[in-house]
Amino acid sequence: MRLLLLGANGQVGHALRPELAALGEVVCTTRSGLLPDGGTCEVADFDQPGTLAALVDRIAPDVVVNAAAYTAVDRAEQERDAAFRANAEAPGALADACARRGALLVHYSTDYVFDGNSSRPWREDDATAPLGVYGASKLAGEAAIRSSGARHMVFRTAWVYGAHGHNFMRTMLRLAAERDELRVVDDQHGTPTAAARIASVTAQALATAGSASGLWHLTASGGTTWHGFASAIIDGAHARGLLPRRPRVLPVPGSEYPTPARRPAYSRLDTSALRAQWPVELPDWASDLDRVLDGLARA
Image (cartoon, rainbow, N blue to C red):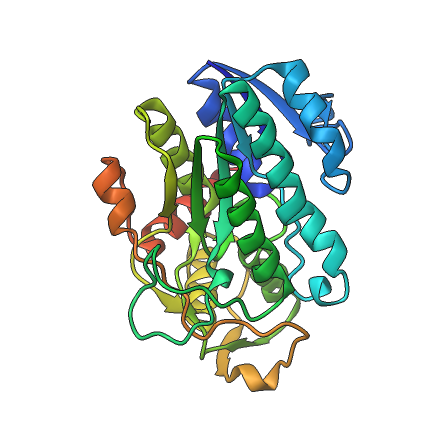
């Protein structure tokens, strides 16, 4: 199997590299043409969607895995065109190229396609209603892929974190080392999902994909709030010696931290369809957090 991995330097892309390598030859791309370890790779600029078809044609992959995206949720409110180029036009161009070649496209979407007005985890067929530009751009990407006719596996995920890249866990660890008190939103509910879990499930799905094509929700199990997640990060990091002291973590309402983009109040995703399609392991979010923190402690 020949796999083209876009966004190889992001947190999900970084986790995908070793998982996909077990399936075949992996050709990595980043926007700069450089990998985090200083190595070189192919260039893929999602701000120029028109250049992506030629890349797919030249590499001639069996599978395209798109882990690249515009993820600056608040900045997207002022950069709508850039968000839609990266999150809608670029995936659409990739999907069209895959359709012409008969290649499979793997793509990641978000819980932010929903408005958060629910009391149960969201299913794939629930009505979408994004609250901001970021969610709208990701939803448009889903539609572009679907309309291309390409065989595709789109995974909606949520609250992604890991040892690499920019994410909530790394931000909390940095702030905890600088402050005696952290104030974290406690009225937004979701499921923290490790990049490593997303990567391993993606590889399992590809290994046994058959003719599967469609949309699935992919997160860890269970749920919490941002405050609950932050508390678990700080407690776990302190217990492993990653923090010399444990700052107080206080719950506050989202209204205390107004942001340009509205966030869904409840964005847990129902993963029943994914688990019915593949025999994947989706542990509780706290168990995966322990694994990530264990890895940081060993580093």
